[in-house]
Length: 222
Image (cartoon, rainbow, N blue to C red; front, side):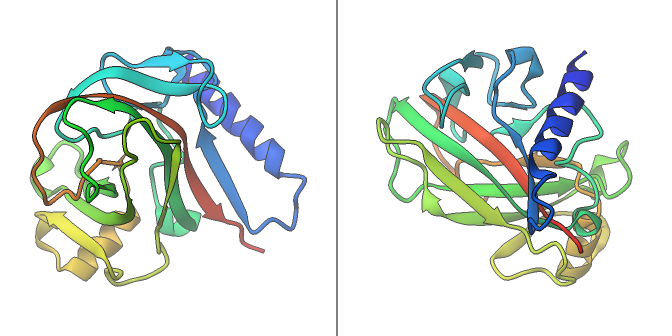
């Protein structure tokens, strides 16, 4: 049932953009308008769907997330628009909206949000060759009590070498950074948005936060 609902939501999204034949891009979005069981992105075990207060409307709310680095992650059915061959699909960006209602230690003004794309390198049963490519965002996590903030991460999926500002993490089957990027971008199997530079350390604290409008955008070919 969950998979069917997600597919129907995707079809509805595509139908909305279909009349604009001249549109340059198509965006698939999770706006949390269904039940928690339908949510394709999650934060933690205490997640709930709030029907109002989002950006706009419903949003995913976790009022008591005990975490050093909150990390929205895709948990929906497969196949998914968020996974697969980004180059063939002409992916241009991913993004989401974030609101921090409270944080027990506060939010450091220098704490960013990042995008992490991961790949099992074609061997899902062997984690030893897995690989990440990540980019650190330029906008910090919202301060508690401030308005919703939108984040957009450009993904140069057509580029054949590791793009500027992107970093590779993991064994990557022993490939060079450029070859690892080429392999990963054509086989993305995990996507997340950690609230930190993946290379930094943060202490655990309790967060009250929400996410909304998690999306991926594709370039339409003529």
